[in-house]
Image 1 (cartoon, helix red, strand yellow):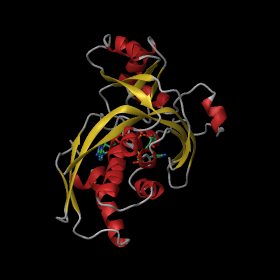
Image 2 (cartoon, rainbow, N blue to C red):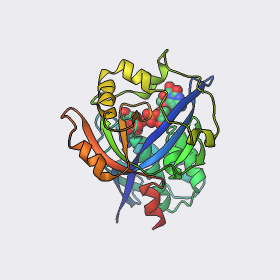
Image 3 (tube, helix red, strand yellow):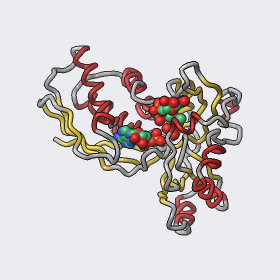
Image 4 (cartoon, protein in one colour):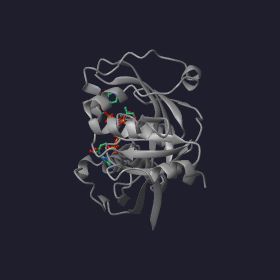
Length: 284
Ligand SMILES: C[C@@](CO)(OP(=O)(O)O)[C@H](O)COP(=O)(O)OP(=O)(O)OC[C@H]1O[C@@H](n2ccc(N)nc2=O)[C@H](O)[C@@H]1O
Ligand SMILES: Nc1ncnc2c1ncn2[C@@H]1O[C@H](COP(=O)(O)OP(=O)(O)O)[C@@H](O)[C@H]1O
């Protein structure tokens, strides 16, 4: 039997860098909200002892694909915990809609969907916190996708406080360049000393992204894109970029601006969701 599971994108509605750890990672205060838009995944489980991917992702080797890594790590853990047999296997399909390396969290979301779907389909019975902990070893953003609720994330993304920001409509735009996360975090001019604030202070202050100034300075297309969008609506960078988003109170207003976008912008309209599509499916 083939099971279909959503793998939604996310936005960082704000992102502040509050320091740097000894291992080089940066401490953040960032607000995650999901999009009602993302990739689609299929899972066909079997007893053939093999994890296979039905689609290639451009420039990502199978062993580096976060979907494969998530499935393999979950299986190894479950065998060690005697929760499944060596023979469990799965064929996984993915229909990619989210631009890669764009700050929309596609790879992390794919990993989280894989962990949650296989936990259910292989009958492993791990709790969400256990899956989130396993997910963190795959990437800093995997735990938020496992938890599936809008949250303020602190540390490097593992300390989550649920919050419920307004579910606005967004015009999400890709400038046609990609900004690798490590490149941005290595930049000597990056702001790394924003003061730590309480949830209440953060939720009631104007929102911004500490990565945006560097992304605009180093990548001309990001700067052009934001200048264009800011003529129509409040707009910001998501994550470490390169995607940006403009926020609107209605779908009609977002779609109106979409009709005006020049051909060099790749855009879509989506609604913010405080519960991810994945968790909506789980609760049905
Ligand atoms: C900063 C965020 C906010 O959502 O950016 P986006 O990737 O979404 O744009 C994410 O937490 C990113 O998470 P993820 O993309 O999983 O990053 P990882 O693979 O864990 O880290 C890639 C590299 O970025 C740097 N890195 C990452 C996260 C962090 N808090 N501090 C860092 O310095 C490290 O050099 C690390 O080796
Ligand atoms: N299943 C996957 N989907 C997307 N990217 C993946 C996947 N597996 C590994 N990657 C790698 O992770 C990088 C970051 O991808 P993604 O999560 O989409 O972006 P971001 O972290 O900027 O939101 C990609 O450039 C790619 O090299």
